[in-house]
Image 1 (cartoon, one colour):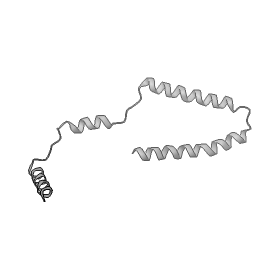
Image 2 (cartoon, one colour):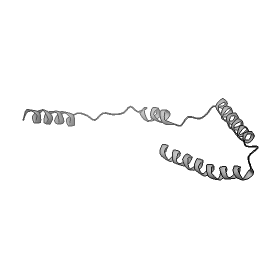
Image 3 (cartoon, rainbow, N blue to C red):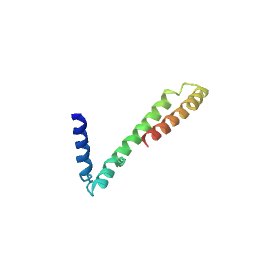
Image 4 (cartoon, rainbow, N blue to C red):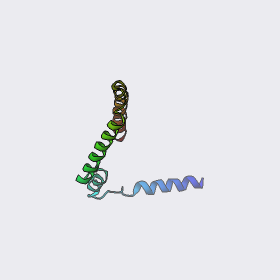
Length: 93
């Protein structure tokens, strides 16, 4: 019975105390921490250069393939990439 009395006293003391308050700046600090980060100009240039280099390398590597194989690969992989991208956005939202 001693444990019940201790629990009752703990609950009584907790409920009697004033509820904790967040600081007025809490919302501003939280929004700064969770706001999505933007790429800098240098970051955008690097991502663009990477995409151009990747596309040109892929085009060069596929220059001996028949056009029907290239089209088939695009028809299969582009919807998959779009689906994965949409799924990833939905998870993080």
